Image 1 (cartoon, rainbow, N blue to C red):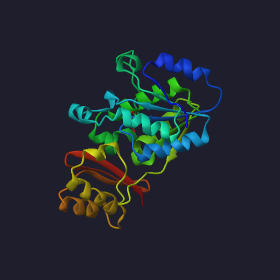
Image 2: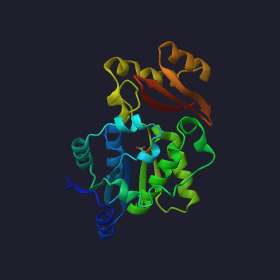
Image 3: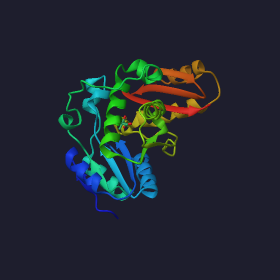
Image 4: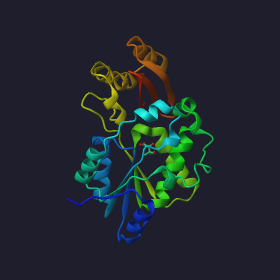
Length: 253
Ligand code: PAF
């Protein structure tokens, strides 16, 4: 097993990065790592000479201060999971260093980012795209791995990389699910035990036949607050609240 290096300083990390001879895979995360992240790290470590995990709860992508405050933080366990899954280094930067401009510069997409999550979380994708672009620049990764659970995010990152001639290959990875179908998410740990029991209904309902209106009615009957449930392209997307925890998922239809 690799001995994991941890960096909080971006400049020290960049020195390390420039010393590496071989391909680098990047897994950007906000921590609270779970088996879904572990699968991305293992895949990167099988496909690259070095694997870097970033852990940064990015404030610019939160439009709700309470959501940011409650985002789970499990630093020690994260390091253990990253190391065991094959990561070589973790970068966990501070706001002042990753936003030297105090977010005066940002990346905005003006089409797909305004739908679905973007319609309900103003500024969310500006924050995501800006921080991901920074992480791609800092890591000079050959490949960067993202899960399809955040399908809208993934598509926006693919389009951004194309628009800005980013040479990193953006790799799409299938959604990792619990045995009962619930999409793995760092937010799942915030569910009560009753909420956790109810949560697989989201995936089950999304995967069942019927219209988006019918699917929404099934969830609402179970007192699940639906933010959106919509079909776009060949996929069905949902965002819903259980115990005030916002969960998202999507399936191919
Ligand atoms: O998907 C996430 O965890 C975040 O949106 C990301 C890509 C790490 C950017 O902060």
